[in-house]
Image (cartoon, rainbow over all chains, first blue to last red; front, side):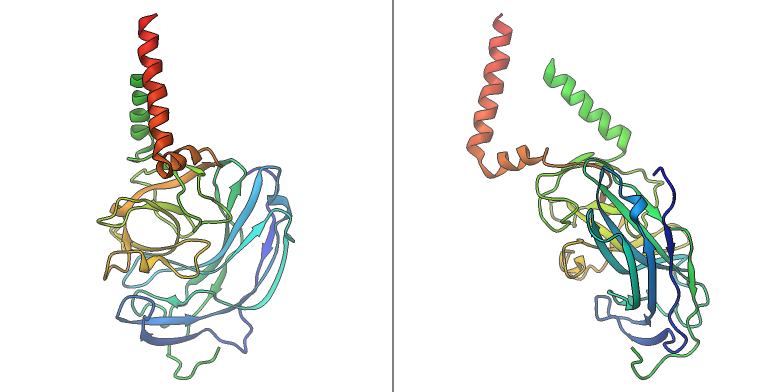
Length: 153
Length: 154
């Protein structure tokens, strides 16, 4: 990828909406009680400089990366968006909830202070190489030590 | 001569890319608008290449022949490198658990045919046409056979 890096930054959830955690059966598949995390986030990004003559679309995604006792590395895609050539490349998204359930493989979100959110994108060209790029700037989202008993979304 | 050169190039590609199927044709619309039916994908499958969220992988479900091209949306990797991951087509509402074997919730490295590294639109349509219209395939084979026979004569 040549050219300047786009300006991408995002802030974590506002203090009034804390990342909440519940411990429920992972109804999306595995029948075990796993931690389910809730995160709210803002995304501010200007992707104009990524679109050159050979870029057909961008697959943009926000992923959470963290370590647990069970697994040395976990990555969960929380949200994604397809941006076609011609769409508005400036994003100003506020109070976004994750698109996909943030289930851990076990109970590794409880008290986890080191969950990092990163914005990345897959460049889909008209023809050619398919690069995966990670934006600079990460945000840390610490999870509380206790489970929530009521839904706070 | 042509056939053996083509075969050598194909076998060479398999070795160089580390994938048993270095070039695949997209068969469904589950990755639109990025890929459409008939597009060609170029794969690599280096064992040292870690599988990470966001990557486009081509995998086969145990017991089924047809490779599926979807995106990795979740990974859980142990310290020893053992990894289990979940995939989803960009154009699908839900993840691929419905496509996996009954009771299977995750994919593993052994299910991966390759990682999509490059792409060419439309070029693979020939394969799909040959599949959907067998008469076209036989006609093509007849023409190729005639060419080989006639060439030898001169």
